[in-house]
Amino acid sequence: MKIKDKNTLLDKEYFELVETLDSFAKENSIPYVIVGGGAVQAHLSDILTNPSQNQKPLYQSMREARAQLEHVFRPTDDIDIVMLTNENYRFFSYELENHIRERFSPNIKKSHKSLGVIKNGHQMRVQLATDPKIYQGFDDALFNYQVESATELDITYDHRGKGCSSKIVVPKPEVLILPKISRFSSGDRIDIYNLTKALSSSGRGFDRSEVRSLVKEFAPDQASRLMKNLDEILNEQ
Image (cartoon, rainbow, N blue to C red; front, side):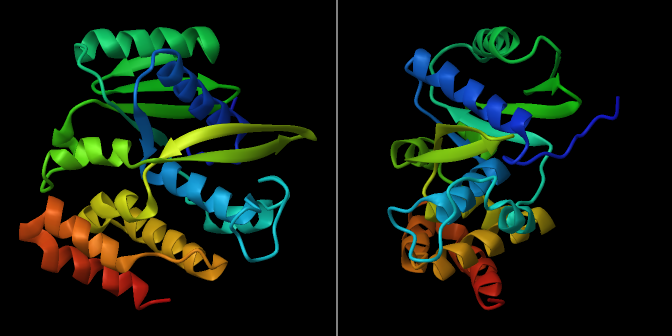
C-alpha cells in the first residue's frame, strides 16, 4: 500500500484524527488549541464555508469548496497541538496515545515528542506541546494566551455524500501567525500569505495593529524583525 505522508483537512483520515484529539481534550477538560498548518487550514475552511460572517459566495461544505481549498491548503505531515496540563509529559502523552489507539487507529509509533499514526494508507504525526519553550524568542506567557484567547470553529466536512462537522479550537489569526513570522520558513510564508489574503478577500479583515501589540508584549526585542517579515507578505498581496 502506498503511504501518503502529506495530508490536509480534505483527507478524511486527517480530519478524523483532529476530531480524535479534540475529543480527548474535551473529555478530560483540558484547554487546548490546534496550531501550525492544521490551524491555518481550519481558518481557511471556515472562511469559505461559514455563512455567518463571510460576505463572498459560500460553499455548503469543504467538499463543495474542494477546488478552492486544494489551491490554498498547504499539505502537511503533522498535527501540532498545544494542551495546558500540569501532568507529567510522559504520562500525559501515554494517555493521549491510548485514546488515539482506541478511538482512531492502533497503528502508532512513538518517537521523541511525537506520535506517528497510520490509517488507510495515510501517515500522520501528532506533535504534542505542553511546555512554552516551543516558542523560542517569545515570552512564556504567549503559550497560555494562545489557548485562553482561542476561537472554536465549526468545520463542515462531506465524505462521499455523508455530511459531518466538528468543532476545532484554534488561535485567532493574529495570534496564530506569531511563531510563523518568527521562523519565516517557506511553509510559514505560504501559510501567512494564504491566511491573510483569505481574511482580506472575505471581508473579515486581518488586524495588523493587533499583531504589532502582541509582538510588543510577547517579543519586544524582536518587534522590528517580526513586523518587517509580516509586511513583506502583506505587500505581496
